Image (cartoon, rainbow, N blue to C red; front, side, top):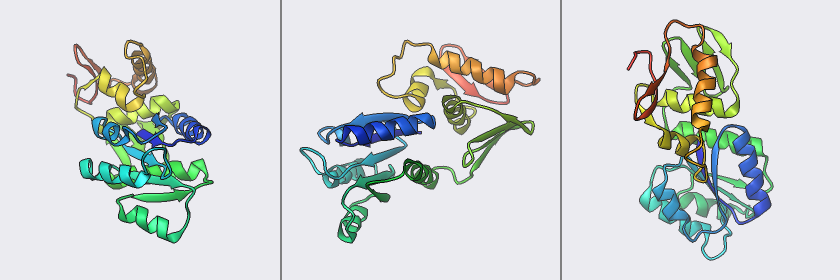
Length: 224
């Protein structure tokens, strides 16, 4: 999951970023709303966490601009304002969810996952051949054997699984599994693909992770 966090409090922003990245998310931070709507429009985010009290522009203005361009992009408002009127205004302006500070990171993460499920595929279990991913438990099994993955490995495999049968360029993988500040010349994608192959494909007659020369990578039970 790739998340845009628009929050001017550096401690809060870093807290969110660190917590979500530990779960395998890619997180981009913005400290003000000057170009927030433009960035949300230009990049294919899975969700936005939006503070209401921002320097220069209000979160409500940004929310309305995001809605005018990307009506289905999940937006979760995170603010210190906890009055009923504020919550109603935020939801009426187009927010999908609303949390007040202080907050528990576990709850924020769970709400983001719920928003993603709401807008994406309804099934919680993804399957390809004998490979199975339980997206709620973040658990992976192949041939009914548990596969132990690190957070980024899981995020990469889930992204490949959600686009099974479709060749994915390295640049697209980087955008969705890592963040916009990631060095695109790094070999980290190749390193994680090799790690996934060792954990998912090794010992099985049919490999599922394929390199598509000149393009990138693909998850498929049929050789390219």
